[in-house]
Length: 194
Ligand SMILES: [Ca+2]
Image (cartoon, rainbow, N blue to C red):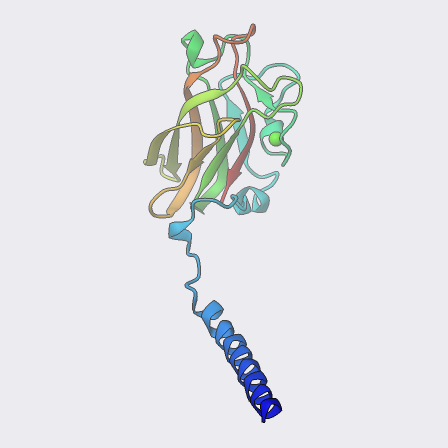
């Protein structure tokens, strides 16, 4: 009699375990998928700058000799791009970098990675910046100002709606550490566009 009860208990436990296992599958599937509109973390895929590699024009208010603009589009944190001596908001200038696509593109996200240069990691950060996007008719279709976040003062510009005819994207430093370093310049590590 005891062994029958034990068998029954065992069968009940196994059945319950099987039920729970079978239940766990639809529970996972039923979890709502994460949508783009709720994305907070995650990285910029950089799909646009990958697609248009070698076809975008990149310019800036100035360049420090030996720390070229190509460093902003090379997929590496270091070496960074540095502006010319004295070209910083802290020194009364309006330093900017600009990416121009050869045609109108749909822009969903633009990321500015702050200075992660291994040789000069401190004292060159942009602290606040403005992103201005123009369309293929030269009209300003987006403008936003953000404060850099994280240890390297990164900027994530995510328009509420995708910008369907973006062509020229300019990032301007409005507050920086140009008064912290001896050269009076600023540095950025990478630009990403999706
Ligand atoms: Ca880079």
